[in-house]
Image (tube, rainbow, N blue to C red; front, side, top):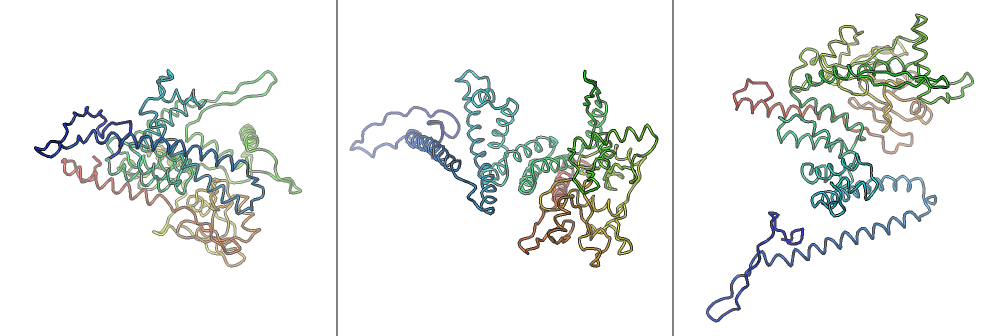
Length: 493
C-alpha cells in the first residue's frame, strides 16, 4: 500500500536498499522482485498525488471564496440568507478539520525548525500572527484529534461540531481521573460528541464538568479543596482615580459570586419609564446601580426592595446530602451549573431557607390547581430548576432572569402548576403573546409551536439521563474489576 513521507514503511523506518537482481537464466524462473523496492514508486506517486490534491484544493477554495466575497448578498431572500449562513458555519468546521490535520502533520515533522522556531506553536505565531496561547492550544488539539479523539475528529470533519467544541471535549477528557478505564473514556467521548451537536461550547463545558465530576471517585474531596483555595483567594480592590471616580476589581469564589449576584440581579432588572419608554441603561450600569442600592439599604437598615428577600438557590440531590462520597454521586449546583462539594452543600443547608421540591418519577413536582393565578414561590422555584434557562429556541438567558409563563393561559382554563408553567425571557415572553406561539411540555422540556403550524422548535434532548448511563456503566466495570482484584463490592477501584 502507499505510505507517506517519501518511502517510509508502516513502521516508520527507511526501507533497506534493494539488492540488484540477476537477469533471468534458462536454468530457472527469475527471482522474486524485492517487495519494499516495489513500493517505492507507488509511495512517491501517492505523495505527489496528495500534494497536488492539497494545492489544487487550496486554489479552488481561494477561487470560491473570491466569488462569494464578490456576490451581492443583498439580492438573496431571507430564507436564502439563513440557509447560506448555516451552511457556511458547517463548512467552516470542515475547513477547521483540514487545517488541524495539516497542523498535526506540521507538528509531527517539526516544520518550524527550518525557520529557527523552537516549536510548531512558535512557528505558527510568527507565520500567521496567531496569539501565542491560541497557537499552543491549536497544536495540542491537532495532535489529540489525530491520536485520542477519533470520533471527535470525524464529527468535526462532517461539520457536526466546531473547533471550539473539539477543544472543550479534549479538556473534559483530560480532566478525567487517571483510574477511569479506556471503555469509559470512549463512552465519555461519544456522549460529549453527541451533546456537541445540540449545545454551544459554553453549555458543553458545563456538561463536561458535570461528567468528569461524576466519574471521579475522589471528586467531592477535590472539589472541597478547590473551594477552600478559591475562598482564600477572594479579594476586592477599590481604587479612587484622580477625578474622584472609583475603580472596582476583584475575584470571588463560586459561592461568593453566586451570593453577590443573587442580591444584585433582582435589583438590576430594567425599569421602563412611566410612559413605557424602555430602560436604556446597559446591564453593567444596572448592576452598578444595584450594588449601590444594596449598600444604601444596608446603611439604612432596610431591604431596599418591596419584593421578597434575595435568595441564593443551590440545587442538591437528597442522595448527595446523605452520601456525598459515594462513587458517581451527583454534585450540588449553583445557578449556572457550577458544581459544589457535598461539604459546601451541607454547610449552606445549615443556614438556608430550604425549598423541598417533591417530584414524581415523571418529574411532576407541584400543583396548586386553579386556586391562584400568581405563581407561588415553591412552584416558581420548581419551574426554574426544571428549565434552567428561557425555553424558547436556543435562548440561554438564565431562568433567574425570566418570567414564568402559563403554557395554557389561565383565562382558558390553564392551572397554576409546574406542568403548566415555563420560563421565558422578556423578549420571548412578549413574542409568544404577540404572535400566538403555543407551548407544549414533553417530559421535562417545552416544545414551541409557531402560529403558522410549521415545524416546531424542539429543544435538545436532556443530557442528565445520558450522563447517568455513562456513570452506571463505569460503576459496573469498576465493581467487576474490584471483585476480580479482591476489593469490596460497590467500591470504585
